[in-house]
Image (cartoon, rainbow, N blue to C red; front, top):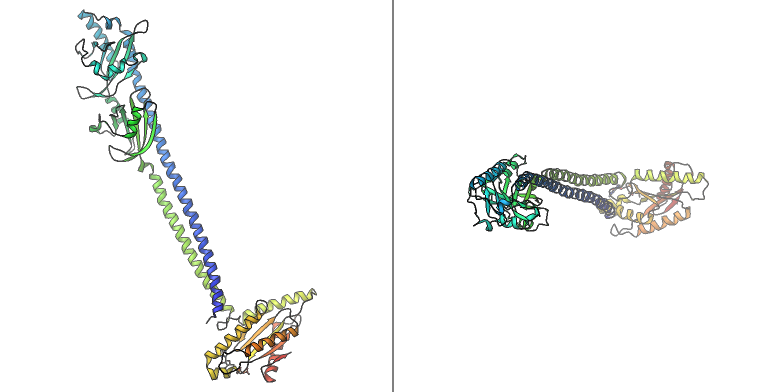
Length: 499
Ligand SMILES: Nc1nc2c(ncn2[C@@H]2O[C@H](COP(=O)(O)OP(=O)(O)OP(=O)(O)O)[C@@H](O)[C@H]2O)c(=O)[nH]1
């Protein structure tokens, strides 16, 4: 049975240690969670930034390629415009043979560019004078309404003009490309105009290696889909209603834009890079599937989750185990050093502490330090057997506990005290003169006699006192105190004897 005091100090120490261990444990867990979360957030952002970078580079390369692919078109049209007699646009020949020769010359030009659907010469009012596809000369009924005409006539001298996409009569997706013809003074005489089949965009995109679920698309400025990898036939020529694409199409100053969006075509979320292709009326859009871009990050997240969870669990279980061990060690220590009934030190613990005190005194004495020697008091309850016999062992135990409490409060922190065995107690008072020790023993004796542990009986004790002699052993000191105690018993009990 432990006293309330003993278990209170034990509980306090355990509580303090437990609080410290859990504080450290949760401190580490917080650091682990904070570090992993920060690391994961950084790598998530890096993964998205890398994918955006990749999409941006791809859109740049494709835009470069599309621009280059129009160089041949520009060259053929330029050659045609320069080689054709502009006078023939203002005053076309009425000689059919001569006209046929001029048309043959144009047909020869058209064969130089594999994607040309047709090539024609138009006067400055967009009236067709020569053509490779044999439409009526003087055809102009719809010409003015067609985009290529208004486009060619708008700032006519600025060079190559490319129209938005239109679907031709043979259901192919085409654009028109025009180049101005000027006279010696630089005035506009007419245009060389070609139709281009855009299927070469698709053929070229088909050659590009692409990771699954990534997309490359080409649009015109009407947001119409010109080509797509992977190819979806029914989407080609379709006008796509997408806010960012539409905005870029309408805003010539916006050259590049990247964002994350679920594709309106196939419903997959991607990181998109939209890029205007130079002066051409096209926009290239490259999409990197978001989930593929963060696939490595996802694996990392999984590993982090496993590592952080195991680390946190190890810390929690480690802390629990430590606290359990600490509690057991404290209990063991208490058992090994304390008397379980009175919670006073036991014989072994007292001997260790007393030997340390005596050796300290001997060291001081050796250095001739002015110090009083320790005084040993041995205390034995009088007629304790009778108490047991009259009131039972429980009351006997209570007497032992109450006397121990008196001894403990009297000794405080500076004096050693212990239950030596049975109903016998020892006290060692450091640096104490004999008179003080006798006064101390008297007070102790009086306090014991006031105890009401056993009903209708005054509890008394006999005390033997002796002063330590330098260099003697604890055993010899104990023996002398025992003699004094024996004398006290012999001389009638409830008294103090000095030896
Ligand atoms: N209740 C209780 N009794 C104990 C304990 N330890 C020893 N005793 C009893 O203490 C008694 C000691 O008796 P004695 O040695 O004859 O001494 P006494 O009766 O005090 O007589 P004097 O010392 O000569 O005054 C014995 O009856 C033991 O059983 C204990 O822990 N609890």
